[in-house]
Image: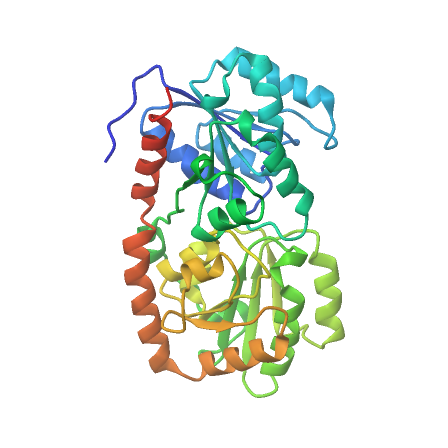
Amino acid sequence: MTDRPHTTSRLLYVITDLQVGGVPLHLFRLARAMRDRGYTLLVVSLAPPGPVSALLEEAGISTFSCQARSTLDLLALWRLRTIIVRFQPDWIHSFLFHANIACRLVAPLAGIPPRRLINEIQTVEIERRWHLTLDRWTHWLCGSEIGNSPSVINHLHKVAGLPIKKLHLLPGGVEIERFEQAIPYPKSTWKLNDRDHLLLWVGRLDPIKGLNDLLRALHILIQHHSCHLLLAGDGPERDPLHQLAVHLGLEQSVTFLGVRQDIARLMKSADLFVFPSYTEGLPNALLEAQAAELPIVCTAVSGNLDVVPDEEHGWLVPPAQPEKLAQALQSAVTNQTKHVQKTLRSKARLRSYYSFNSMIDKYIQHYFTIQ
């Protein structure tokens, strides 16, 4: 374990928003661990407070909102500069594109040199290519840019054109024990019996997550197997997905759980985890599913393949092909022997590559390379 910091070490985290999602929840776990290692912390969001703001405050971690109302909210940028000047951090570590750009613009105005600004990207951006262009134009305003998977680093270098010396690979991690110790719910919680197959998806209801494909695949699957799908999360696609579920006659086969704080218990309750995204960075949900020893069906796309590299560790399907997804789900729910084999391999790989404490140590080591 990395030595505890000097009591004067001050760390400012900045993020675009604190809505429930993979990156804000990653920041919550990171901030909690860094506080326990002795750092003085402040977490700043550009947007108004979200549910993760409350989690941070409940954990005793101070937060501040810049109350941004739009991408070009100059008053929010001024608030960010003000809080940096007041807090006087040793390092600024930002997450997500808008927070990264805001910090690059504002930190110099607050007296923070570029070398003490660390940006982090946790997704392979394929929709908004202008993000990559702006990242390339302004990368000189930060000291380093962290990517949480080889896929992210490769994308930032080869597609965004960032110099490789600027990029730093720091894989995510998962608290394995929390999932091992979780108590499952009985299937009767969802009016199911033990013969029914319980499928789970966790994340933000967003178009990039491929959930339309999942519902269409489920429509095919339930013609042959008794299955029920739990969708844990919220987001802009909630209403359209509800409408599609009704259109496909899936009202009795899908439960929209909304935002949940009991993901570990849900994962221990499910029979299968499914993740049909079109792109990812390093999906925490897949790491958590492996920690819970859940067999996984996911798309063979950037990010997912860093966690489930081949068919030895899960069922892989091409993105945006509901029929192939349905075939993989059918294979998964009918082959218990492969469940055991794949989950054992996945759990062993998880312990080797994605230890939570190892991740925290690597963050601290990176901070202290910056003087």
